[in-house]
Length: 166
Image: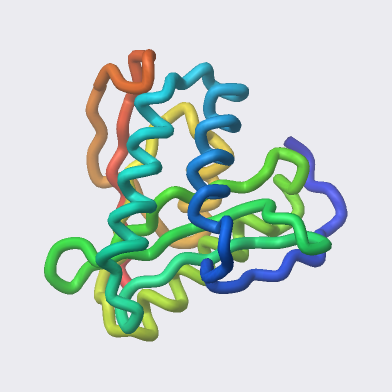
């Protein structure tokens, strides 16, 4: 995709009514439209969102929404993982806003937060078909540490684990 004019997106904490539901719905709809992923993926996102909503530690975990003109266009979560590490989760950018810096800003927000609260490492899991997201991760300093074939969301995929030493 070629870059278009930068967008004036605002990034805010996920804290408004409807944010949690939007994250689940947007993931389900977008991944179905783009990749044909089934409701198994939407259910995974729903579990991640529900765990965050009910159990997150606000001092060490956060989630953000990107907005353009008051419309939600993206999100990312930073949650605790193994000792000394956080996990970047469920990054999403509306296709109409891709190539305009929204994804980069969301990833950067997550990295800056993880570093500021004392994590030494930020990890993530993705699939190789998510080319645009993988480019963002690589540009932010993440590297692939392993990958494996799996059948999920109605498809044969290659899952990848990435790490960023902070």
